[in-house]
Length: 64
Picture 1 (tube, rainbow, N blue to C red):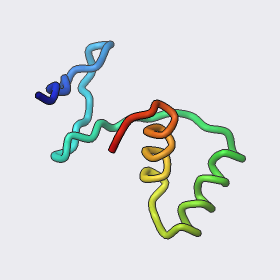
Picture 2: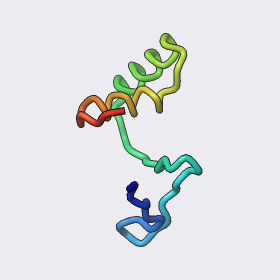
Picture 3: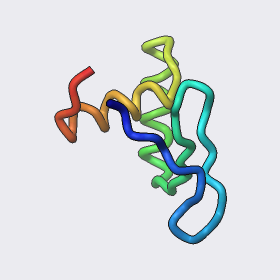
Picture 4: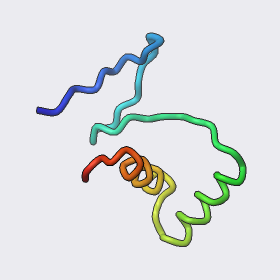
């Protein structure tokens, strides 16, 4: 059974959850990381979000 994602963040603010159950996160990256991500997304004809999600799943060994 899937866990329900809370809509309240740890500091009491609202957490943005899409209709597909995706959670919105905001984080800071260095300029060189940003450029590498932007270039990879363009070359692979995909989104930066998709690349980040794939990398996170691979890093944390999460199955698709």
